[in-house]
Length: 274
Ligand SMILES: [Fe+2]
Ligand SMILES: [Fe+2]
Image (cartoon, rainbow, N blue to C red; front, side, top):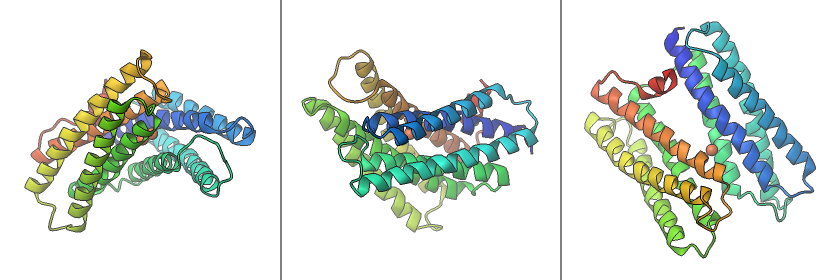
């Protein structure tokens, strides 16, 4: 129990509780007007995660680690509930019980995977059982590369079909990240022999290049959407949301790179101490 535990916890909870709050909004927007029960449930999750976010922002690096540990447990419960809600919605869509609703099944699965990731992070923090670095590098990249590949697919499908050039660009990113994901899974199945410093370092370098250009594409898309310069059904907040998730992945890649090369800087923590 230390300052580092508090810093890491607050960083994770501040980032992911905002994400969970926004997922509730996106799900709500995709329901039909008559789905009042689902809309109400989504609204409740929005309120819950907004409160968690505010609480996390009010804590500081000086907060008692025991208080943070209890807080993490509370957040863990809330995340479990939103995960269940997302899986329930996925079930309703896949059994054709919400005809005409506007949430893609892959999007609902995607947001549930993010909830599951957040839940695992909270467990790791509270039990103090962090994965060894070479395992964490592969697992985090497998997780985030799939998230990035999904984002490219969502952007492609939510842009107006007449935005041919942008749709093309989004589809290219989708292909590129599918490839990177397969490569990451190959490295995964070659464990532990694949976990050499040069291979992991190259893996991070290659992923960073692609994530940086996807991040830039998302940034441009966000600006165009905010200025109403392109035709799409993408909510401006969704454009910002996927941009922030790419930034998060880049910060994690940098943190791994620094740990591999033995540099002391830890971007995730410094982000939160700002
Ligand atoms: Fe998300
Ligand atoms: Fe996402």
